[in-house]
Image 1 (cartoon, rainbow, N blue to C red):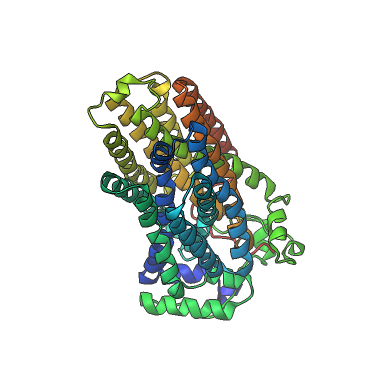
Image 2 (cartoon, one colour):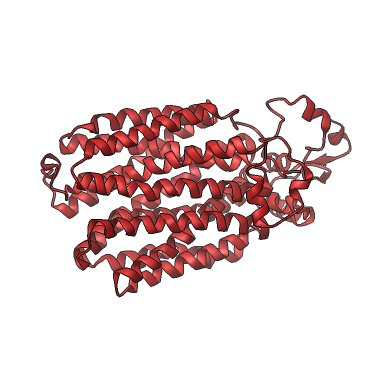
Length: 483
């Protein structure tokens, strides 16, 4: 209360006063475009592999590598882009991410052979590894009281990107070929590059770097666009120096993480930020996030690839699935479109829950439902039932993946937020790298039961991790610094 009497206010208090208005709507649109672009590039993996395999006579392992190399690039990129944006700013991250993703994505259209396509798709994956920067950037503009709901709204861009890609492939592959799909799928990344000049820097990042004057100018612009007012007084980085509050924290006032020692902030190098994730205050959070996001990524991307494999029936192992009445290509695209639509009700349900019951409970509920929908697929099912079960599994897996993606950056202070979320995302991408070996190799080898059993086991482990997180982030202020 003493700080309020002398006319001081924090960034979180400023954001609450400014509310969510037109300025944040633009930030939402730009950051959402980044996730829209990633969803399109990821969804390509469900379609391009089979088309290229047929045209170039590839083996199943070569087909799987086209998916795995993208995730391998994302693993490397997630760490690199996180440290760049934490050290040099979120806007610097946007610029380099957009250049790499759009350039490599478009050039892969002209790949003369398999090796060049693999290399270029690896660079696309490297660029896509930075999309967690967009999420963290948007997070830093949103008032704490409505953060969960708006982050779910943000995640709908991924869903619409998936739906758009499935529609695009359905239309383009019928008349043209996979090269046109690659070219058109790179357009959103070029749009990010084109709009880069009007994207503002994160005021939270600026405060963390001691540039409160620059942060204040952005807040004043937000106030002008939103037609609201800043609190009276002087902007300060945080109230974390108030020792009395640290000694008796309350659930409404404490930051998302306890303060770290000032010595941990001396170096601004990315390597230093990385090692801060393993400090005594962060190591448990880091370890649990890694396991959770691995499980989320493994199950979510695995369900996408299962849709491709079980819908097409290309392995010849599942005659009941092939008898749906569609042509092979149409069956694949129709079912991919239907299961992409499934993400919308999942996001709607998670939006209702995330700011009411909290992040942990929402993830537990949705992951539990995903488990139930996958369970009948331990045995072969008719085509319609298979599609319905995959619909339900993807609906809940996407909801869990989304809430976990919100939870990750909320857990870290601003000084290491994109590094922490980026590295956790990178570990999650390893799940994406491994899942093609399960979905493609096991299903092609007529081992559907074993493949589903692995997914169920991963979900159980992930549910156990959720229960061990020490607290929920619902309604809590973000921690601005690690000092």
